[in-house]
Image (cartoon, rainbow, N blue to C red; front, side, top):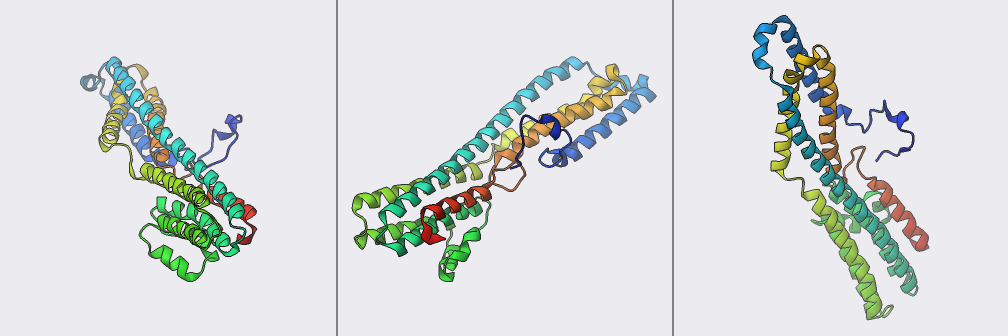
Length: 293
């Protein structure tokens, strides 16, 4: 995610990173080239070209439909982006709660306390890489023994392996008499909530926008932008090229924004800063449980 000051909008007029310009440049360029060809033919052969022109009214009505489709697309994508942010906020809070209970309830079991704190720090890193189709414990892996890292990498679902190890440690503390059943239930509830938030993130990651909707929107958008010069050239003349550039940039840019924020867990400039979230959890847990430092 790109940090910025929302009150200084003039400083972003010429920003390229995160502006979708690179992603839509080819499509916009094709529209501009096509509008140039249309405009040239309109001026060179006005009598023969008239049969290809049509009133702008029909195109205006189509533009209203395209605008509604784009608004729905962008809103649904932002809902997914914001839900992903809330889920990661919950992971941060629940990791703090788990670390707080671990430090308070397991003072008499320092080794179990340390291991549970380390696995708590590892869970968000494992979740991050799971959401990106990878298998890793991130930078926290260096704090574990090699056999633990190997077991985590060999597991089919790394975050669930981490959660299972956390549950095993809580059970070990209960069997050793360091905590009672109620305290075990409290710790296990925190672990269960972490798994629930992981499942919510996976739901967003594995369920893109319906294929039919995406295909239909793009087909209509292409038809709209590439027929735009035919509707404008009679009234706009050479200004058709500029008008097509502005409208195509706007339409394709809005659609591409929806595509980028639809999956907020990647590495695009507008995605969530998951590495920062994981580093924050790691820092918070280390402050609460000094033995994991």
